[in-house]
Length: 251
Image (cartoon, rainbow, N blue to C red):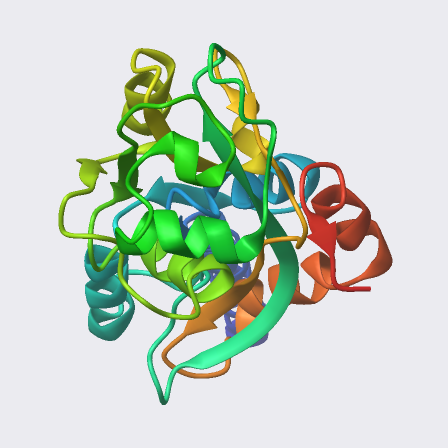
């Protein structure tokens, strides 16, 4: 009798432990969903980032376009995993992705169709102030530039002006839409656009040089995890093919 009671008790305990194990398994927390990678870009590099994010089907990302100072603040504070820009600070991790080409643009009614690099520098420096000085019709030149300290202004200055700032008399465009509008509405104006922005409502001026700037991926330190995987893909042959649609790839 005692033996049967012990067997009954052991069986009851075994069934109870099995039920608890099943319950514990059923209540286990689901695997954590990885947080999206936060990727930022200046408006000079934003089309490149958009193309890459759209093409990388395995990427879960949050994409934001910001001015260069805000972008650098986010990187330093850890609010961004990776950023695309031309201008970066000493000490930041930076690796090349592709080249952006600048187009010098004038009003569609402007008869000037070609400039030498030296003439362009003279115009932006304020040394050439009349279109007649560079082969056009008589009339004052209205220089349009991006705001000082922006990625766009710094990159154009390096590519076209030997690092010099534009004349203090230049009109300042806060973004590419404003640059396009300022040139398209003023027959005397001259400005610049990155090639991915296109030439709607303005005319490109031929140059004897190609104005390019290198777009890099920037981070406070070498990226890890999903950001590193995205960067490796962007520098691979398929990623470079995506960049080559609107920019010049580095490989």
